[in-house]
Length: 157
Image (cartoon, helix red, strand yellow):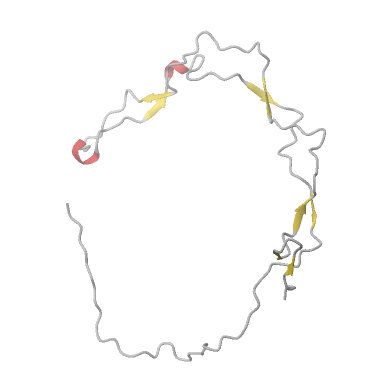
C-alpha cells in the first residue's frame, strides 16, 4: 500500500508527485540550436515567372458529372481538384524563401530529469469493506417478464 499523503509546508497534501522531476533552473546547453532549418541568404529571390495569383489546384477541366447526378438531391456537382499546370514551370501562390537543413540542430531540447526521492508510487484511496455489499449466487433468477414496451419514432419532412 502507498504511504499516507503528507502535508506540505504550503498546506497542500503531498501526493508524491511524479516519478521524475525536472532539475531546477537547468540552463539551455550552450551548443543547443533552436531552429531545425535555416533561411537561405538574401540573394534567393522570387523567380520572375512565379505566379502569385494562381491557385495551386484547379477543378479538373476534363472531368464530367456522373450520368446519375441529380442537382436537386446531390447538390451542385464540383469537379475534383488537380494540380494547376501553370504552376509547373516555376510555381504559384505565396512565395517563401527556401530553407536548408541546419547541420547544428540536434532535435528538440528536453530538460534533464532526475528521480524524485519523495515519490511513493501511484496514489490510491484506502479501501474499506462495503457493509451494503452482498453476493448474488443466481443473478439469472429473476421474476418472469410480463411484457415489453417498444416506442417507435419516425421522422419525415
